[in-house]
Amino acid sequence: MIEIREVSKSYGAVQVLKSCSLSIGVGEVVVVCGPSGSGKSTLLKCVNGLETFDGGEIVVGGLRVADAAELRRLRTQIGMVFQSLELYPHLTALDNICLAPRVVLGRTRAEAEARAHSLLARVGLTGHEAKFPSQLSGGQQQRVAIARSLAMDPVVMLFDEPTSALDPAMIKEVLDVMSDLARDGMTMIVVTHEMGFARRVANRIVYMEEGEIVEVRKPEDFFLAPQSEKARVFLSKILDH
Amino acid sequence: MSNLDFDVIWRNLPYLWEGLRLSFMLAGLAILGGMVLGAILAVLRMSPVKPVAWAAAAYVNFFRSVPLILVIFWFYFMVPLVLGRATGPFVSALVAFTLFETAYYCEIIRAGVQSIPKGQVAAGLASGMSRFQALRHIVMPQALLYMTPILLSQSFILFQDTSLVYVVTLRDFMTSASTVANQELKLVELYIFAAAVYFVVCFTGSRLAGKVGGRFRK
Image (cartoon, rainbow over all chains, first blue to last red; front, side, top):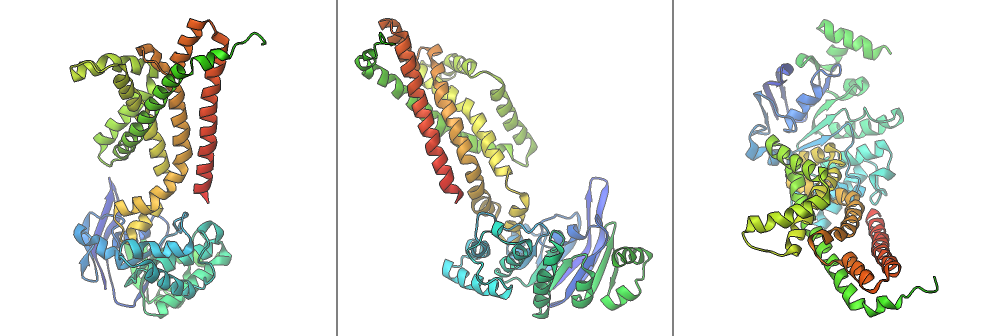
């Protein structure tokens, strides 16, 4: 489904991605973790072309990300959820979800709204259709953002630290929606520090440090016995606090 | 105050009205032209092509650093030279005001657009929108909300500034009032009247602008 082959990227003299390769199958859930500045978010954003890369290749569902002519079509098939939520503040929850399907896919308002209603129900927000983002809690906003991505009927979902900006009390409601999505067979790449979620939901864990993919393991192996010293230190820091 | 003669205003009303019409005309056309050119300049100013952005910035900084009255003077002599024929003071004043205000409108529009977090555009692009679609559906509706009151208040400043065209012998409202004041020796009456007219136009205008802004915000 997703082929990342030897992707590299530099900002001037600083190499932020060092020949990263990863292959992800249909329905697979991959959690990417690592210290901040390790290149996790950059790698994720390369997958839908929000970040460019200098070397290597990324292919999603047969379409090459670097191919400018294919990029917009590719993006319609890849949903993305951001750390900073990024709902459109001038639109209601319902209109946030309907905008891209109407503008990009050319769906009618009635079609888009029918779909939006069922997606809001799916993320547990029936009754909040007419609210503006400022009237919703952070957790509710992030669930609307997930519904907004799903409205494009993506085959892949990317999550960039979806719970990092949320109050601890709201993290669970977002993770629950993501777990449901994984159970329904969605192919997902999730950058997160939520190790409980990673252990329960991920098929594989990718550990990154300094722009490099250091380890790719099954969660049970990764958490019990990380191979690299770096990952061991990282895990001891975030698990024992 | 009892010996003030406000009847002089009634007697000269058609003459004063002509002056006010010129002020409205000049301000109206300059606002329209300034906003259109300002929007184009703002796009250039935000261009990823550096020399284009620099050129636009240089334009803005230049016009914001010189007094308007100098610009009016300057174009009074420049425009006929460039066009190679006499144009009359109205055209050259209109060019001066339009190009001067373009710099201010550009900055207001740019600030409005840049007040929208980049992440929202990224969210739009990530869902397959083109840059234009993201601008049209995500950035502009919000930026307009933010810009409208500032654009309108800049426009009222422009209206007041049209009184500077006396330097190129144009007969705007202020000049008409001055002329009548001197001919009829009724300085106090005419200047009170002129102040009242500017106040009424700008005050009612800005109240209306506030209402419009308020309705947008809902």
